Length: 129
Image (cartoon, rainbow, N blue to C red; front, side, top):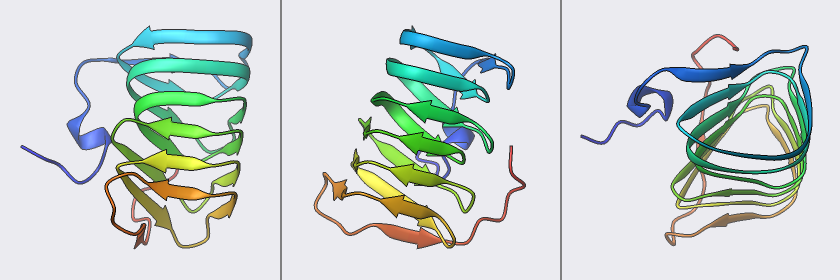
C-alpha cells in the first residue's frame, strides 16, 4: 500500500546519528536513517534518510527516499521521493520521482522530477524532528 509520507512507509528500526556526531567520508548502508549531526562527504543508502532540523550535510546524498529539514550543501538523488520541510535550506540540485516542498523551505538549485510531473507543495503539519 502506498503511503504519502515517507516515514509512514519506513520499515524496521531507525539508525540515529546524534547531533554531536560529525562524519567525514562516505556513509554506506541499508535501512532507515535519521541524521541529526554533521557530514562532509557522500552517502549511498538503500532506504529512507531524514536530515533533521539543525543537521548539516555537505556532499552528495543518494538514497531511496529523502526528507530534508536541515541544511544541505550538495546534490540529493532519490530513487523515489524527496520531501523538503519548511526548516530546510538546500544549496544544490534535487532529483527524484516525486518531490514535495513545504512552504518556507529555501532551495538554491535545480529541481528535477524524474517521473515527468511538477513538484508538489504542502504545508508542514508535523513538529520538527
